[in-house]
Image 1 (spheres, rainbow, N blue to C red):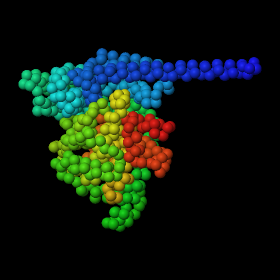
Image 2: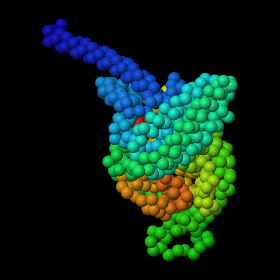
Image 3: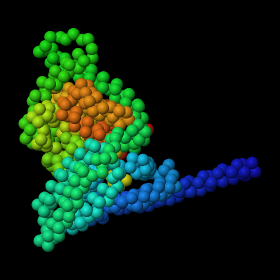
Image 4: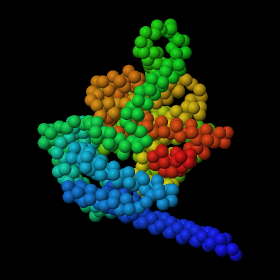
Length: 586
């Protein structure tokens, strides 16, 4: 071989050898990084569930069912130090080398750890939210009673242990409180009263031997005594002299927004899009309402925007009079489920999983006071457990005027929208699919904008698919529900990052969103008790409709609605921008 060619051959062989060595090294690094990430996530999961045992039970991890966790200052300091250590360890892993699924879990874990640190260091809600007592204790006890994840005797043993710890938990959480907003105190008092009544009834909910019943009865007496003392302390104690503004403030709202809502847009961008959507949705409603309005009225003279809104309101008022009586609210919700099931199956909306029964019931007392309905699903790690569709009863102390206002808001068509959102094909279906995703990180850190965005998206999707048989009243009511999500985002930001007053918020909801006064008053209470959560509905549904539009364009004639829905749901409750990446290759 000519020397020139020999040297060329030799250089080529050396380059190939180096390339092979590099590939082996990179592959080995990838495997090592994957192994290290798996070890770290396993360690974090074990630590997380040990630190928050009630969350562990609710998620479906049952190694700490007999515990409540600790809530003193030293424990919080220790948790914060642990979170910072996990952050350092996580930073030693290069996510770019991990498999694609693990890359998503890495980003979710990193983002969530920073969110937990933010909550402890900056929000400090344990210092000013008295609702933690009924929330943690109620959730810790009733997740053992209601969820049949183990034989009764096993759950009763854990229940007895947790009941014995109630006085300590109450004391620790009470000692952390230094101030509280008035609405938080009022709500906590009501929820604590409800929890006391529920604890007294525990013997009716369980089966065990007489000696265990006797011990449990003693623990119940001690728990009721400590909770009664706590309720009295809320009513007459030092918090009455240490009020706090319920508003989060612009700085904290902005920072919390990226953890609780989305990293994909800023609050300002969402606010602008919400205002634009408010006008366009009202215009759509006007086009739907005008034919019916003109069938009974002369054509109005349009001078201001309020003339347009009056046409919409006139039609919505006619729809609102068709509703059930106050004692039929829960039954009315039950009656919608069969109709929705049949429509979803007939129109191939999504494949339903009937392995988890849906139980419609009156909302437990310790949960009441925040929303009119919710879906109480088993944890993402549970299998084949019942799902509770909770409907809040109309309070006995409401006046007839307030009751009528509530029933008009949840009229015969509107209650179907409620069930679409909460159950079929909304939260119930989405969370059923999420249980199939094996990632524990995704089970722990479910994304609110995906969960609420999906449910809000399904309201419009069902109407577009033909639910309501083309009746324009169904579409106009659905548009009203769309306005609810839009207005949620607007008032969430205006209340917590600015200074929107109660009167202004209620006026905005009633006049711009056509909400009944009772609904608007309830939303004002909810807006005070939460921050950023109300923004997840509009944010998530924006992202869902954009994903569907882009996926339809990608698939063209091959687009299949059920296939699209099942693909979206297959990734679990993760941020929608990750689902976009998986489905569109972005």
